[in-house]
Image 1 (cartoon, rainbow, N blue to C red):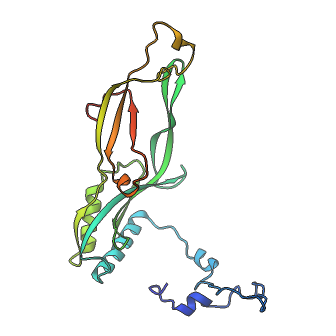
Image 2: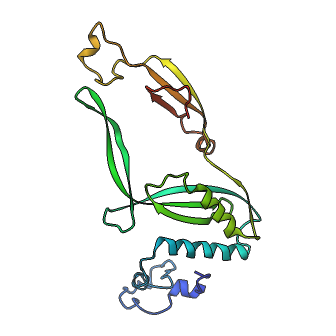
Image 3: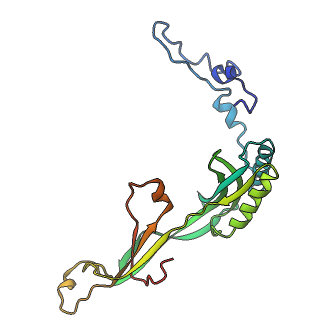
Length: 243
C-alpha cells in the first residue's frame, strides 16, 4: 500500500468516511481489537475492474519488472525457477485454447477392452520465472492452454534476462529433474488385467498380465519433503527407457 501512495493512517482508517455510519457502534466497555478498514472500500475496487488483452498485460507486467530491476529490487545474482500453470475458463471465453486431457480414473472396462476417458478443457496457460530469494516474478507470458510447457520456455527465460537488464544477472535455471530406474518382470496380482477380478481368474489357462515398474530414485520434491513416500509408477509398457 505504501508503494501505491497510502500511508499507515490511510490503511488503518481509510481515505474517506464512506461506510462508517453503516457499522454498529462497539460497546465502549469491551476491549476492541484495532480495526483496520483498508485505504479503499470494495465498491471502489470493483469500479476499476476492466478487461485487458494478454499481450498488453505482458507488456505492462514486464515493463514494471524492468523498472524494479533498475532500482535494485532483485539480487545481483539470481538462481531462477521457471514454472507453467493452467488457467481454465469456459468455452465462451474469447481467445481461449482447448486441449483434450485424460480423465481420472483413466481406465474403464468397456466390452472386454480398456478405454481411456478424455475431457475437453478450455483456458489459458501462464509462464513465469521466479526469484526464490525475493519471491518476486521476473517475467510473465500468456498463451493458450494447448501450448506445450516446453515450447515457450526459451523465450520466457530470454525475456527474464532482458527484464533484469544490467542490474541483475540470472546465473542458473532450476528445472525439475528425476532420476529413475525401470524394473521388469514383476509378479502381478491376478486382477491386474483388462477383465479385473472375477471368476475368470480360476480358469486353468488364466495368465495375469505382466507388470513393470518405474521407481523414482531422485525427486526434487522429496528433498524438501523427506517424509513423503517414494514414487513408484506401475505400467504394462516397456521400462527400458523410463523417461
